[in-house]
Length: 442
Image 1 (tube, rainbow, N blue to C red):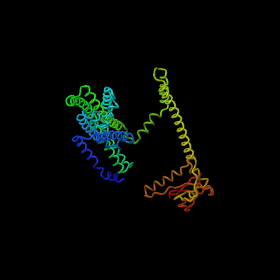
Image 2 (image 1 turned 90 degrees about the horizontal axis):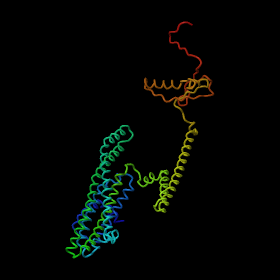
Image 3 (image 1 turned 180 degrees about the horizontal axis):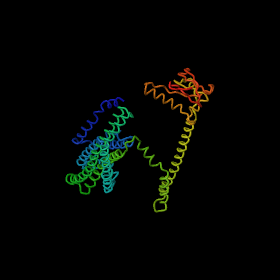
């Protein structure tokens, strides 16, 4: 734990020390044991980068990837220089163990006794990385960077509009602006970093040719080897060296391709992959039927039968699960509708609520308050409140209208905070004539 805490306190020194160490590896010959550790560490870092790319939810969670891509490319090129020195200087004495056990294992395991096999596999890996993954990732990075920059003004305006509308606060607006800037910077950096990967693939091919040509010359001129012996030894070492460097490069290039093709939504790649690919039972059923039809051809029966039955079984399982989810959602919606339609039961404390203003009317005055019977009492009360608010600046509280059966039919009461203020009588079937001082006659 003490070592971990010390490393955590001085972690800002790791990157500078690593870069200085890369320069030292170029200048100073390394023992084979140290070279094995560095080559194994290169493979481990590449695997970690690939898995980190898979498990992150958004590309911006791994926004140091462009810099990391340049650093790993530099590390691989430095290791290529170091292994080339060991191969050319120690192959005559140590044979296949000249550059360490890792390169020897790769050369013997992949090539075996057939050098042609190792050369073909190496060429295939380089072509896949250079022509397929790296080229595609570079193109996606270019398009993403251009669209990110072109869409930046519109997104900034959308953030400002949300801020002015009150949908977000200043802190959220600042956070979104920073995320927008980080996204544009990230894709711009990925566009440039992709060129390093392409250059690394080209350099790997050239270094391989140089190792073979230089090994043939050194073996025949200085180690007294025949052409066949020199070609067999140095080609096997070179193929092992090329595979040790190109496999990590292939993994990092794959990680770059996965990263730039990810959407900006915060989702887990593995979960979305399984959900979107295997969530259509119709597609699985058709694929299973197609595989079963291929049984009647010259293709192997057992693999097709197993895969076809597996697709059909998975289709049935997915269909059953979707039906269960649909039924569960329907029941939940029905329960929610029933609960919504059910009138809420009054609590005892609800009866203690006091209205600011309330008008209680008898049964004979109900037609005045019933819109279905032509009553407009509530509209008139609202109009009076509006007039008082506009002309006098007095905003009356809402008036509650309630019927009271124990009142006489034509009697009404006005209450304020539950206290009776006045009582009156109205005749809905009669008209009220008011003398304004200009009436004559009896």
